[in-house]
Amino acid sequence: MNILVSACLLGVNCRYSGKRAEVDSKLKKLIKKHNIIPVCPEIFGGLPTPREPAEINGERVKSTSGKDFTDSFLRGAGEVLRLAELFECRYALLKERSPSCGHGRIYDGTFSSALTNGDGICAKALSDAGIRVFGESEIDELILLCDIV
Image (cartoon, helix red, strand yellow):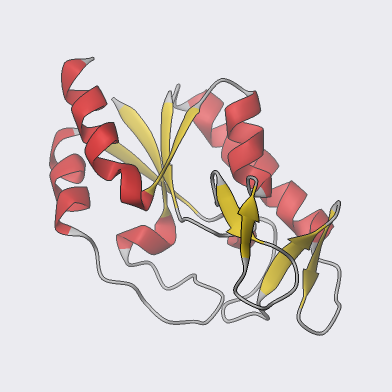
């Protein structure tokens, strides 16, 4: 089975802060059993690493200095969706709270660490296309689902 996974969760140095994350042991189990397609919509959209933090504010994605990153986020989401279709991915494991990948809860656009209900640009595009999106805290559910299907 082919599964999209946020590249930052795989230890790829693409996070906005430029810091590398450790790969979770549960994710390593998923990697051993399934084909993982690493994606970073922000990089695919042309943004550098590191980059200014950004949050969704209304219909736009804005950085802490007020730069509008919306077009980059939309372009990156389109590229991820293209890969999902090419590789026939039915599931995606994405970075929680991200303005690209967040699913269910994202930062509220005030840069105060407050969360609000909603999805990031890429997570919404994938969900709208019928791809089931999981945040990294839901990996147990994804593993169970993948082992059953």
